[in-house]
Image 1 (tube, rainbow, N blue to C red):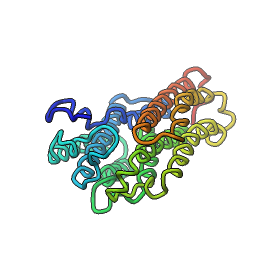
Image 2: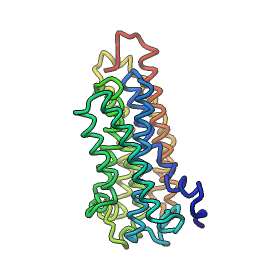
Image 3: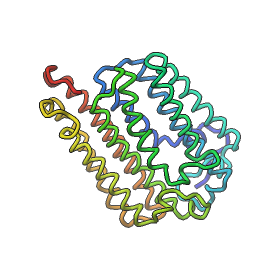
Image 4: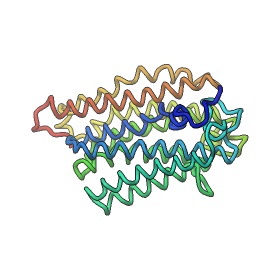
Length: 312
């Protein structure tokens, strides 16, 4: 695949990896839905934090993997900016810093409006996580911890954090919805790392996929997807008090995203190389659809039913 012309807008859109941005955006809307009350400027700020951090992570990963020789011509998938020569390493680094900086400013505004003591440390951890994924002396992606961090930051913290900045508490629904989205976000990363096992291993990047091997990685992918939908199905019984089940049945809308997961689940058993790209994109589509349906269910659960059964 030919790299786009250096300096073009397409270069930076490609570097932002727009197909992956739903993993950061969906938890924000779900968290707002779980809160049951939206402060619109805070929702916009939370979206800026999510998008800024994710684009920053993508660009930082592009930079560090490019200068360390992890991304090479042998890599399968869209070309990266640094390794393809579409943009200079310095320009990509500064773009990553700018995106993370914008996210930091928006996060600071949310902390000032809610709780500096709680939101600021969490935001600082998110910034460190964004940089430490592929940067620093010991990137945690190469320690096999990328999946854990994605579950925590793109699942629990993104969802619960959004709920908190809306109503300054974390409803029970935010925890289990965040867990479901976190598992699907992990599945996206697992599909990506499964595809990249040969090139990552050759470059000495020991992701979890490299560490546990091809077959176990495929099984981990299946477990994450099934676990996400099982979490949605069991969430009401586990987290929502029984008298409120009638008010929350709409949240099961999230299960309607399951048909989108069928093809990726089938393909991951046999696909190799470029055949794994549809697994990655299909999983991202499943995540986005599940997030949209969960949000719809959370909103309906507050508008359709009697207010005497509020969502916790």
